Length: 142
Image 1 (cartoon, rainbow, N blue to C red):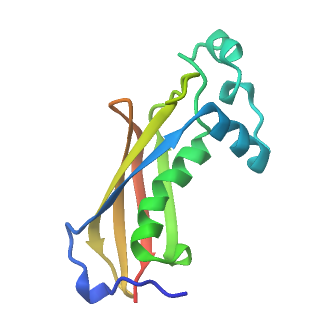
Image 2 (image 1 turned 120 degrees about the horizontal axis):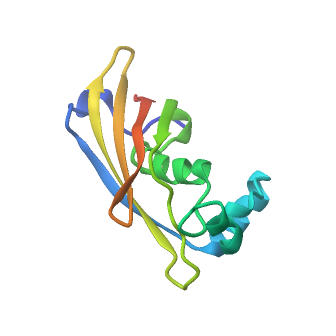
Image 3 (image 1 turned 120 degrees about the vertical axis):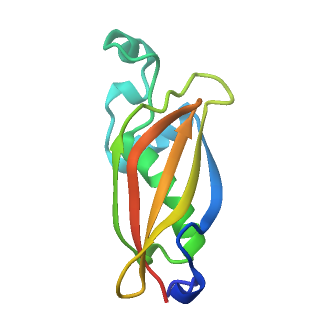
């Protein structure tokens, strides 16, 4: 599958469709099973608060994966993402209720590079706080 977005049709400043991704404690337990990361800060409220966290927090890699969905949904091909990196700035706190937390992600084309590639800068927020810093992806377009 090739990228559905054409390099010639993209300009610096092009905004990607935003995404909102709900996270519940059940989501975290499923992710722990898939990833093998059973650190109790991701599912045990008592343990999380004892180590100084406000509550259970989402896995960093889970948060990172949710954020890149904005890019893969936009480009139409997960394989088009050739580089991706973030800094973890704040945790996604996931309360033990029916609503859980929400990760809200926006993206913008920040640069046009050589070889039909673009750099997309992402902003990921949860509970009014930026949860990822320096979140950037390089995407190969057609």
